[in-house]
Length: 117
Length: 115
Image (spheres, chains in turn purple, brown):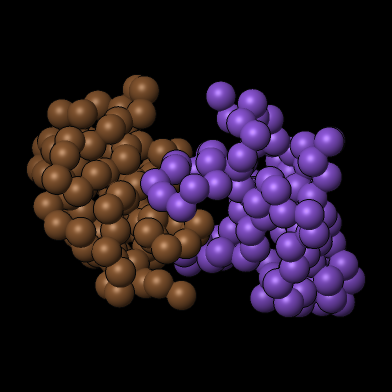
């Protein structure tokens, strides 16, 4: 069975600082995908970044980067130059299989990030 | 990116009544849709996987007769909460798998309050 663990219930960061949100995973699959989603107070799930298990380079999307350490089974999200609008709940999720199609996502417990001015 | 809509965004109903929530993929055909439930300050919990033209696959512990799922077309899945009770009050979110991408696209969610 797949499992995602986020050990930081809450994080407080000063505006403009970088922040790392931790995520570790457990799976016996060789092929899998890792996602990070942002959920503001409105409730919508906003896709941030994706890393495939066979991707050799860490994924980057603007201010977001994913620090993928396969041997340690970690997929930490790094947000550079944090902004007040980054305050939200952040979820790490895993999907089994790299074949495009209907593979369900398993979510971590989430980390509530608060950016202080 | 692809768009998934949900309707209604908020609903308040009386205990004992049924409520239907619609999930639509607006610009792609979704063979599979997923229904999640989220309690306050908690993570998303997968309830069921909805497959077009076949019966839904429910996660362990989710009552099939209480949460009826119908996926009648490639763009529409519905979740009906039957005989709702206050403990069914929650945030319900659907997602749809794109056939051309690894991504799942989420709807904006439906907040159900049962009084």
